Amino acid sequence: MGERLHSKEFTSELFDANWGRFDRYAGYVRSIHYDQALGFRGRRGLLSNRTLAYMFLHRPNFESSMFPKLASVKWTVEDTDGFTQLLLFLVPTITTLRISCRGFLEDDCIKVLKTLAPRNIHLTELRIAMRMHTQAFLDGLADVFEVQRGLIRVGVPHYSASQRVVATLATLPSLEQYELWGFVEYQHPLEIGMDFDWELQGFTTLKTFALFTPLNDAAKVMSRPHQPHLNDFTLISREFLEHAQLRNLCSSLSALQPSLTVLYLSLYSGTVGPDPSSQTIPFDLIRPLLMCTSLQELCIRSDMALEYKDEDIASMASAWPSLGILSLCADPVSDVRFATGQPLQSVGSFTQYFRALRELSLYVNALDIQAILGVFARSRLSVLDFGTSPIPTKSAVASDLSRARYMTSLLVPHAKIKSERSNGHKRFLETSLAAKEEYARRERFWSKFAAEVYEILSGATDPARETLGHRAEVQCPDRSRVKPQPSYE
Image (tube, rainbow, N blue to C red; front, side, top):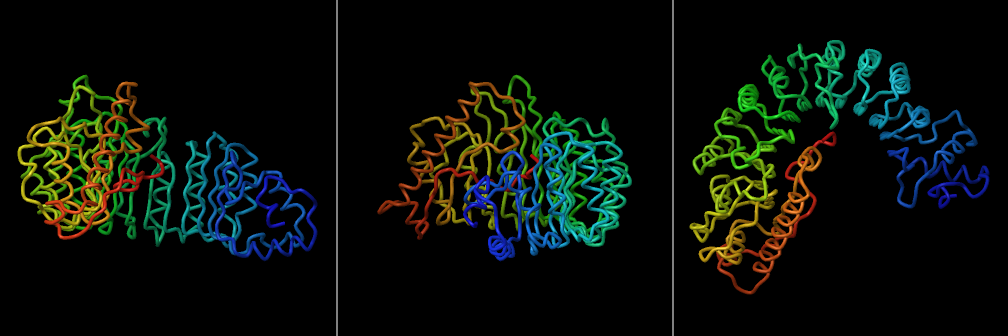
């Protein structure tokens, strides 16, 4: 029966002996991932809905749990049948429940919430991704939070921040992570009842907070009194970036020091002016963040490139001595005719000033190459991402070979050079076919560049390698990210 369980259907009726073997194996199951469009995800195949129904209807000792040590359930549904099957797995042993609904199944969703509230289930993590925003849904959420007092991590739709839901969450004694998720086609939160007249002060144990909302609303929440232990903040915003809004947000975030250690801002709107070279973010807008002196990870992604000078790099390094991961608008929108960004040798400035920096993502133009053969600097840099940076222009001063040699002096062994667009850039920006082709061309160039660096480091002799005093390896672009982006992006 072991083999047949991984097929879509059973080939024959199961006998008691088969069920005995099944129970022995089922005792090892700790997590279940179900996608209604596919079935159960297993190593050898997928279980169909029919097979699942057969198991529950014909299994002896049906009064006992089919998976006695089940702790985690991830469930993606498209219709009522999918929700009905989920109810069978809401057993007392589960501590993690993640539900994602692709359709608008409000009645079924509310039924699941009502089931969670009275059951003898003690969840520590609950994540719900749905497009329901009625009062009945909000009441159902609040009822669950009133019962599930042991929750540590909560992820719910961005429109669920009603007064009652937030007030109930604030009383959870162990809540450490609160994420408000959104969708691509989301409406403005105020149009669907989201209420920002609340503050984080009551969340006495909260460490991680994520918002999917316009900048003004985020600044409104973050400007109010907050609990002093918040160390990880994420903001996803999809409206046109006004400079004043960004300045206000950064000023509000500066009040989180000294506790803030991780900051992630994804500010793609998909709308830019006709001249991308003028669509930039002055460094002064984010200067208030220099007050957050405990930062260890900072990622800013936007339609616009960030403007900064060498002295700004020095200021950032001085303010953030423990920063290990830094991403500064590495994949802005850029027309194929323009090549804005920082000079390639600015990478050397980062490695010189930031002594703890391990991962760097930035947008370069590589046009100013006069100092590219400067002094080699030691660093801890292990990941270098050029985002959507344009292809460097050829010059008699700096050839592709000299650029590659320059990079070898800045990397540690087994480092990675890559070039890729973030999920936010791919999903929320409407780009022309010509622009997409240009992005692909740039990625191919940087992939080739990474291969050239690898070849130099693998050679017998090279000035950069001798300066480093150690062997290094540079890999071609992979799909990893500077900071893992939230799944709701």
